Length: 308
Image 1 (cartoon, helix red, strand yellow):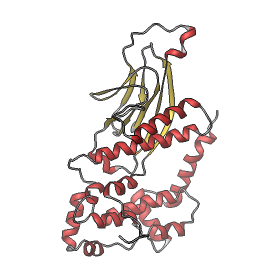
Image 2 (cartoon, rainbow, N blue to C red):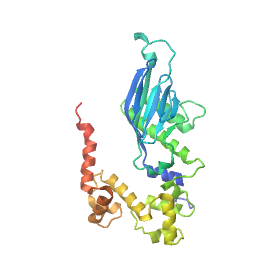
Image 3 (cartoon, rainbow, N blue to C red):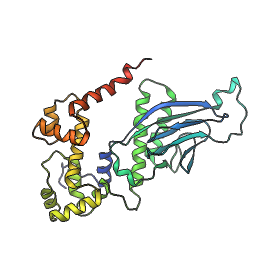
Image 4 (cartoon, rainbow, N blue to C red):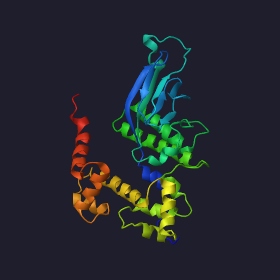
């Protein structure tokens, strides 16, 4: 590759970028560690143990113990998840020792709205690293250690940093899963890692607004149209043009949350006119772009408008 050219992202990076994965702390749970307690976790979501003795995360038949500085992610939104106290054999708390026996966990959600490709992954997962532990990756140790510090400091802007650090850890978890030598269910990742159509898939993901057709994609892959289309469906579970339309609508939904005009958004999504974009958007999303923009604006304003 010539000097000054941009490096081509590997398939896993392409897939992770397509997920647009984000973690958001929704609430904090603080309780006495020598008391019996259990709380529900929003799914898909996570539980981050900030301090205190060990606790347990459960989803279905899976049970994982967590200590301070560990985080557990729940990817399957169809399953309930709970975190509860572990058996405690310490002294009973008294007024002067409450702080010593206080246990704090942060619960939150994981935005997996674009993560259909994770359908091959387990619905329950505990990150196999803890802050300061030798077996943790440098990235996990850094994120967990600083996440604990920000969570306990209580300084302005700390929660935003905690969200970013937890997102980093979650991406590290996904990367570890994708690095496993195992087959994948139909997904973008399966297509990205395919020797025949991986390069074309990456370009479609990066630039869905281009004037794609099955013929163009097949020629890029040096395959016949029917052969390419059959291979694409086999790997992704979608036809090539349905996949392109889906990516364009994802981009359209993102841009409708901005102040860009409908004409600009239509162009960014690869449509020659507002009417063509609006027709495709309504067909796939069940509402007009204008209605979607209004609903998104209302949802964004709701927390600020809610009574204290």
